[in-house]
Image 1 (cartoon, rainbow, N blue to C red):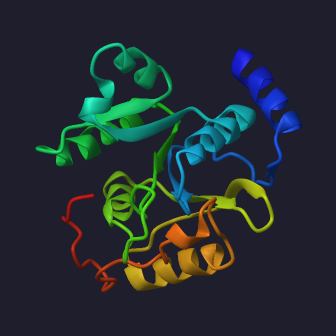
Image 2: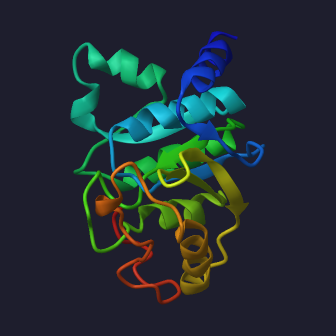
Length: 197
């Protein structure tokens, strides 16, 4: 397969080392963190193609206009209409029900900026679809990247976030100064479950 061949070449030449758990065998919400650079997208594709994961990712609708649309969709992009973000969950549920196996890549710490909190959308999608969370990472301090454990969400948001915080505690992105601590604005169980991503 061309993607596997390209990814093998990429990892052979890259200064990054792929250190990873096995690829999930069922649909999963694949967290990409810390997300501090556009290069994270290249690393994500390299990981996915090397492990044979069919990835989907969410992007603002404007990214899919004109000539970019077919390319973005080919790379797994799903356009999000900011006026109707809840529609995305329904689309993901339909994909899961149809038997599609994929990793839905979400960067909950925002878009390459030092934010105060993670966005809650990743957790809401996991709850509403029954998908687990796979903890993908980029760590500049060790120059490693890959997939960590896959965990089931329990509905105890604080406990689940404690597990996520423990995993990412020693991980730094490409630009460590932009890293956001894995923390939701309100981690009380069930709080804000209908909040937008």
